[in-house]
Structure formats: structure tokens, C-alpha cells
Length: 170
Image (tube, rainbow, N blue to C red; front, side):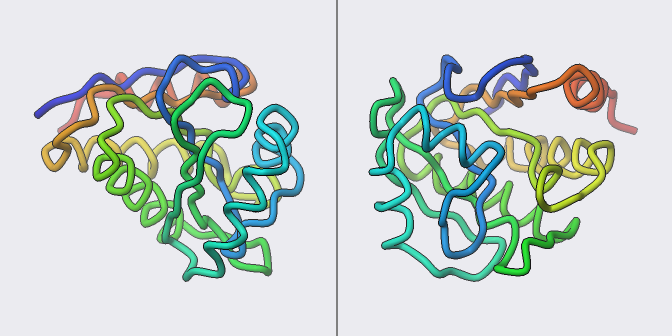
């Protein structure tokens, strides 16, 4: 099965997908950045539900309901441990774990933020390369996913992810 990969600029809590991904720590407490925006928009119930499912190993993902958000699920990808540091390996693993979990849940559309580029301090260009490659690599394994969206908050991230999505494979 193949799916559409798209980039949009905006607020991930307002996306038109069935699920969104939270770039999380492995205990799933929701602080600033994307996690903070999700908690503010969807309610503390999302964090409470997520924390009951942690801790997990960095690179893994869990899901919760979406609280007040007009979505089916929030997938929480443990992109970092309690040290709030990430790596190319953890970003790749968390991307694939999120896609795999969403696909098992029967999700047809999912939106990702840029993993680890906020508090994790990971370079945005490298993040775009890793995440887009992981999403393209999962495509042949997807049974339900029909659309993957990268929802970016600023112009630089939007441009870098769009360039990666549009890049032709060698």
C-alpha cells in the first residue's frame, strides 16, 4: 500500500488527521513545546493517561485518547529519556514505532511534529532527513495508513521538511 506524505505549516492540535504524535520523554510528562500545546488544547487528561503507560524505553510509543481535541488518538513517541537528549537512532525508532502503533490502531491519517528539535536540541535539517526517510521506509508495511503529515510550526522547519519530502530517491 502507498500513502500520501505531505507537509503543512501550523498548529498540530488543529490538524485534519485522525491522530497526532507528541514528541515525548519516556515517562510521558508533558512540559513545553508540542507536548505543552497538546496538553493546553486537549486537556490534562491526555498527560494523565500517557503517564500511566510509562516509563518505556526511549524509541518506543504509546497512545492515549485525545481529550478535547477533535482526533481519535494522540500517539506519544518517546524521543528522549529523562535527560531530555535525543539522537538520530531514537528519532528513527520513535518515528517507526509511532507509525506501527497508529497502523495497528487502524488510523488512516497521522500528523508528526519535528522530533527532538525543541528541548532535545537536535538539528532540524538532520531531523527532517531522518524522519522523512523513516516514513518513506515504512510505506510498504502500512496496512491502514493512507496519509502522513508533517505539521511544522515555523517557516524554516516547513521548508526543510518539504524539501526532504519532495526529494527523489537515488
